Length: 199
Length: 251
Image 1 (tube, chains in turn purple, red):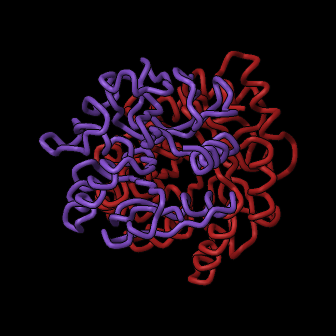
Image 2 (spheres, rainbow over the protein chains, first blue to last red):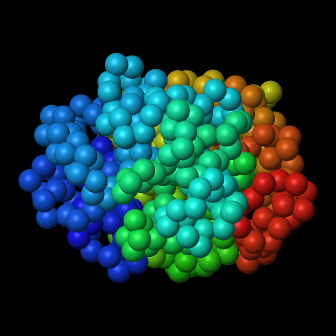
């Protein structure tokens, strides 16, 4: 069963509906106890980095997620959920992230911020998550901050917004997308299906 | 590279899609869920729903339309019309909306933009401005184009962005439904003053006019209603035309 971590900020409905459309069962998990029933987790996220981390800590979910991440079980972070997997963010200085991926998130320095809309993806490393996703396929982005280049070899794909930035990160069974696969039409649904079936 | 978005807009009155001219003379155009699926299949980058019925029944109907559409359509859904509080926002987001747009309520209660952004994130909060020319500038109108708020539309956009709006949906009342072309001066005036994305709305009649508002108006996205509802052009035809001129679009 796919567990979708709910810390009171994210809009979880879209993620659930995308999985339902693909025929996968998911459940919303609001407390650490719920995590034990899941075999894979989605960490969604909208709102600010600091607000999300505070809520995760208050509910005890942060600790449970830390254990989950260390145990090597599958997790997909979406948008802010992916940024939470880095070491921190300019958005909320001094608030540590989960530190799975190196570096801190920074604000887009050029162009309109937030970046809102469809941007093309260029794979950097082969990964089951991106199987069948064409080079240059478009995905829907909606954010003001992005993970820095320190993610290095964990960068599975990049996009360009007045400069290249990591758009998909991966290490072990952990994946993160800067975009919203659940809102990215056919390409996004394909990516979610890939994740459930092979990551 | 970020694509320019082509967004069909569905004005919904108690469950029926309608479209008028300059916010008046409404005509019926079809079923919202059916049209949403059609435009999604044509490659719409986003769908915009606007509840123009002012009744509680119409509001409730909009929630169930959003529920239904988001079961089948996996592109961003933006929903507006009559949103007055964080609770109204939450109800629509829980139904499957990805963004909420506020117009009159934000003029009455500007802090609503800040509160919404704090809870749901700026990318979720769209400030919709119904602008009408008044001499050499534009005023923001409220109540579906019924009342002049006295606010300068461009200044209001700047203030809204500061308060936390993540996008400006800029509707020209003068051009709405006329097919005379977007009000490029209006779009450009706002685009030059804010750093958040601007969606141009009102007046699309030809592919050339759409290109003009992107190039000269610096619009990040274009909203269309009449051309699509009257089946004069498809989303795909518009995107092909833009791509031929070198505008990045999503396929």
